[in-house]
Length: 69
Image (tube, rainbow, N blue to C red; front, side, top):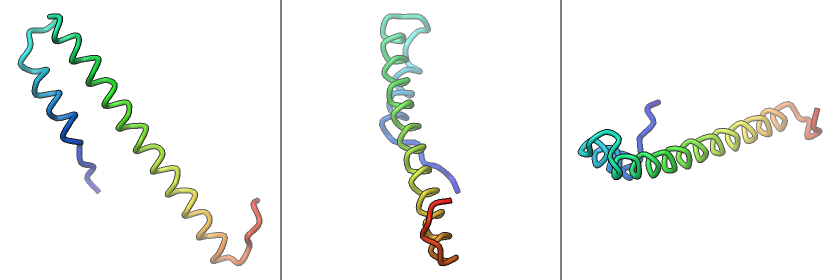
């Protein structure tokens, strides 16, 4: 299953590639990119946790026990 990288991250990376390394704009866009990547990764983690919880609940229902172990 391939994960798609959001357009905003790709756009920032393309812009970052045009700047000279260690320039003021390069540092600025590096920070912006880090924020976007962090937000994207956190979103993926939350979705993963939600899916895990849903799967556990589904297994409990299939086994006929609604108690937490």
